[in-house]
Structure formats: C-alpha cells, structure tokens
Image (cartoon, rainbow, N blue to C red):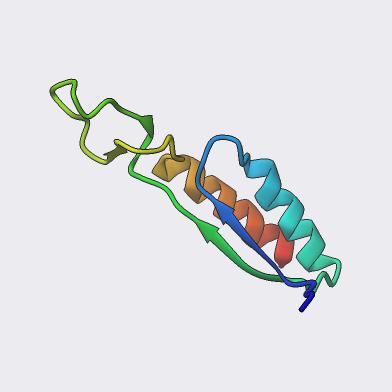
Length: 83
C-alpha cells in the first residue's frame, strides 16, 4: 500500500533545523501529507563518550543530539511559521 503521509524524526546532526523550517513552510502552504514531527533532544547538545569521566549531565552517550536551547529555538520558529 502506498501512502503520501510523512513523519519527520529530528534528532541527529544530519537532520538540521532547516528540515523543521521546511516542514513548517509546507504545513503552512497546506501540505497535509506531513502527519507528525518528532524532535528528540537533550539538555546539553552533542554526544559524549560514556567511558570518559566525569560525564556531562543531560548530554547523550549514544547519538549527537540537539541541546535544549537549539530545540526551543527550532520549535518556536516552527510555531511561528505554521501560525
């Protein structure tokens, strides 16, 4: 079965905030194909090596993620774009 629905997952550095900006523009222009956005982030941006001590509280040990401030800015832009 083919579908035109699109769900966007935003967590890794390869997926830039520009993707959320583009999604916002598409939604505002009536792009009903976007069914969901998942934005995963941590308190601190980036990734740390779990074997190096001390660990940074709130920073991923698996994947480089957005930090809270970058996530907040991207979501505020998205909300403003969508209206």
